[in-house]
Image (cartoon, rainbow, N blue to C red; front, side, top):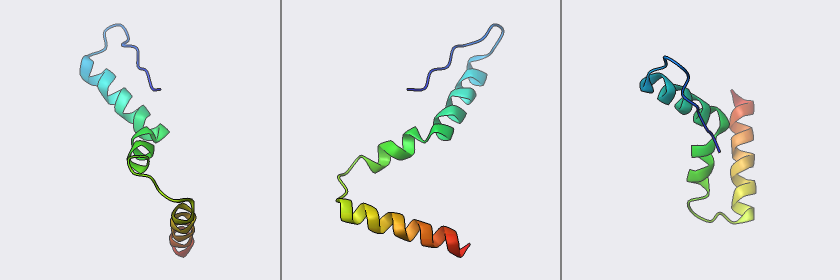
Length: 58
């Protein structure tokens, strides 16, 4: 779980920006979207294999 404690003399916008950066860095939203629907293990392997091939191609 990502937590951000607001510092002294820090605006709410700055704290929110730090929170958003931390959430995107840790991949919390990406994982939540993936877990929104069940993915069979065979489909997960297939997707990961395709992602690796795509990365390798670049």
